Image (cartoon, rainbow, N blue to C red; front, side):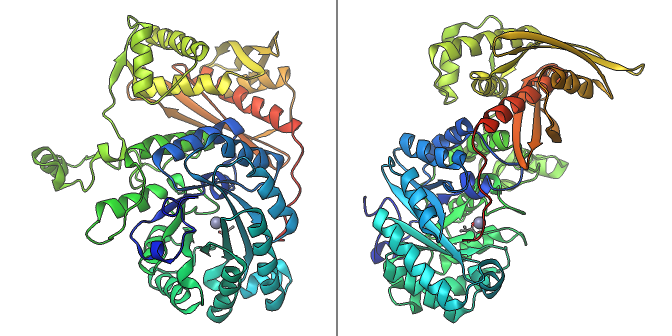
Length: 527
Ligand code: KIV
Ligand code: ZN
């Protein structure tokens, strides 16, 4: 492993100005209720993270489920640049499972953790301080026997007694941890306090100058990004974060905000990251789509309005000189003017070139299917934009291996009622039709689908977004289904919102079927 391109390197690097970006969208982000992703979706996200220059990708928690294990293993196989990390509690079983999932990674890292605060020791672990100290030594030693690159985290570090925190950090360093991550697990700390915690550990713990310190801040008080940057000022050189700030409760520190703050305020933060910021928008859109977590309109950097100027005074100033009201350019985060791309007279060659320019590489069959879908769309909608192409390609990727497909749909809707739907599905090669009445057209469609494919899943989310502006815009529908405590999301797009709804429901159903075939994960305890 190279000394400078990943953290885990010795002292000199720590004092440098390079900040390593550790993305945990696929682990901590995916852990947030309802944000679960399929293997294919995780692979897509991992590829974009690698391409944008993320230094470490936390790909999952291998012991948590077979799905997580498989995701870490497959991501380890495809990603060639970033370090791939798997999470493990302080138990032999967890650590061995993480080591196994990472076996094919070019640059593996095991990340092991245990709660260290009084409340975690007493209630979650039911262990005293000495027992936790022992577990730290045992777990880090075991991880180091499997992997040279070991990260250790004292969970709930910011509510841990400072002297005890120093004791366990020292033990982890002596046992061989190369990165010490300091989680603000409950989003409780403040910038000044967190800066001081990191400084104290770096300067006062023996061996603190031989490892990389890392921040892992949750956003319960809206301070995650500020706390992470303060941690860097205190001496941390790795920041753990997620795309769009996805994560448990109020989420994790948002990658895009951290990176753009460092980039934009070079005068204040004398650090740099290896991130290609022009891929931020692509990553944000992908994560939002696969997790079905919409991005808040006024979210910093990636919100729909982040670069919009509405008020007269702002528009006037902006037109005279963009810098009057813009501290970053939209291009710097990869936001392009919505460009008109193709129409019904465009040929395959132009389409292939457009896809390449947008960063898609499709095989011949997928390309042909996407081309036909573009032609169909151009028949319904005069102008086809970049966003339309993205929706077509995403839909194609999502449905290519589906066992159930929507063949046709007829709906009777309107004020008169009852609303009625007739749906024909292809279920593993057999065409089946059902008819149902419902409380509204969407309800009727979903009931008809349920007649063909009986299931008891609940529908906690149904969401419609317009892909572009205008009356003829495609609708993109996201649906979340919940069965036995597990959730899956599906997406569908079409110029007809009801067709998009049927596709989204069927897409979620396909994922539910696949998930049913996998073994149920064991219930997670603290250790
Ligand atoms: O928030 C937290 O404490 C975590 C640890 C597992 C690092 O996610
Ligand atoms: Zn966390």
